[in-house]
Structures are given as C-alpha cells and as structure tokens.
Length: 246
Image (cartoon, rainbow, N blue to C red):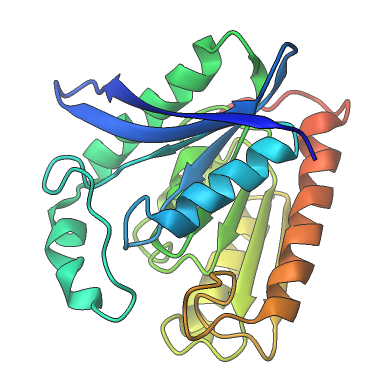
C-alpha cells in the first residue's frame, strides 16, 4: 500500500456556490488515475473519508465532494437518523448534481498528479446513483455503484450516454431497492448496448460495505472491494480504448 497525503479543498461550482471536498492522493512524486468518491446520504463522514484514503493507497488521486453544500455544509449524519438527511436530499436537483460532479471532475482533470483521461467513479447508496449520473455526463473510464437506489426511472433516459463500463453491487436482502428496480436498470443497459457487470450478494443487506452500519457484512465487503479493484485494473489501468461521452 502506498503512503498517502490528505487535504480538504474548496471547489467553485458553476452555479456560483462553493463546495468543500475531501481529497487523498499517493504521497510523493508520480502521476496516477483519478477517482471520484460519492457519498451516502450521511455526508462525507468518516466512512467516506476512509474509502477515499483506501482508494488513494491503491494508487489513485481521489476526491469526495460534499453534495449537501447548498443546505448543510459539513453535514455528517447518524446512520440511525436517516430523517435528518431527508431535507438535504430533497433539496438536491439533477441540474445541480451535474454541476457538482463537473466541479469535482475538473479538479481531478487539472490536478498535476492525476492522469486526465483515466478518471473513474465509485459511489455508495445515494452516491451509487451519482456514479451512474457521472458516467452519463463526464468522460469516465469506469464507474462503480454500490446499492444505488433511484437510478430507475429518473436516470434511465441517460443510459445511452454512459461513457464507461459500470459495475453494480446489490444486496439480496436489501428491502430499500426492489428487484424490479434492478431489472429495469439492467434491461435498459442491455437495450442500449452498454457494458456492465452486475453482482448481487445474496446474504448482504443495504449498506453492507460500511463497517459502522448494523448491516455491515465483512465477507461481502471484502469480496466487493476485491472485485472493484480488479474492475478498475481492467478498465482504468489497462490499455483499453479511452471512454467518450456518447
């Protein structure tokens, strides 16, 4: 594992707002692929910061933007108090989400240590949806979505614009995301001819990757992380064709 350096930064968004973000990168010299890390509904909390650092130790320049910056800068909610996050989720618009993604993407694209045409994304819960949205709006090499609810039906018209192969993780015990949702997403990706990998872990629940949630499943989390790294090695570090937004 690489030694890393972490930093908080502030990004200027196209709508005139400022957005804080947590960043991590390999320490020292060299250039590395870039990674967008997208939060759950509970903010850029210790769990998301830890993932950002894990990504950096694998050799990526990583950034986790705070999507609630318009209503609750610095928000870190409790996993036992989801209603506290709801006003901030409801205040978000797709237009503003796209602007936030673009601001974080542009930060990576201009970072002196990031390889500008090897940027990918990974997101969890709300962030899993963001990963899909990002792949449809900026040129990525790969996109990973962990239990990303809300992709269907709102984002399905964007499926034809996906710029990158996608890796989906779902929990077979997840009551928050119905099987019909998953089937609808996959059917649309098949229809428009997009590349994806779909993984359902039968004994995992929603939030299985988060080690501070009651639903944490260490075996499922370890498997998902291993598969994620292999997926990234194939599509980001490999010599495949550069992704372009359709």
